[in-house]
Amino acid sequence: MNTSTHQHISTLPVMESFYTIQGEGFYQGHAAYFIRLAGCDVGCVWCDVKESWEADQHPKIEVSEIVSQAKKSGSKIAVVTGGEPALYDLSALTNELQAAGLKTNIETSGAYPLSGTWDWVCLSPKKFKAPHPSVFEKADELKIIIYNKSDFDWAEEHAAQVSSSCQLFLQPEWSREKEMIPLIIEYVKKNPQWKVSLQIHKYMNIP
Image (cartoon, rainbow, N blue to C red; front, top):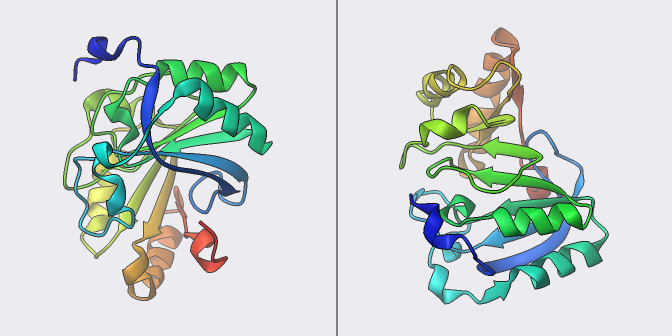
């Protein structure tokens, strides 16, 4: 993707933004302000925010306003998610968030090269669209969604491409949680370089 056309991006399509507890992955349990950008062409069949896919169905909001709301929340962490946030040039957003004193975290499928300055990159690749090779070396966290048994092999293929310091997580797909958790537990016991990630926000009934 040629991001040069977005160089002076000052608005982004925002589906929603809210202050909550990060429910999954490395920052699980931490208070975090979520900025959910609209627009995604990855097409995960089990996506739980399909309403985020169409960017033009959501308002374009000034970067300065997005950052102002994030700062007001009192959160120390801003998580930029989607949709697929890497569709956009996020340089202005990350610069302003960091200037406002927030840590910048992104959750991405890796389908596009990253722009912006990130304190933490969570790569959660999907079978529906392969990650861009440049994203693997930037990943601080690799989070693989386990939907069926074959996903463990797929997880290892991706783990082989990230840096040795990257944190590795296996997370059951929510609708298959009962079936997959016992398999994940056994797998992590045999392969302790991996950790279990659960969507604890769903247990706590929060967004």
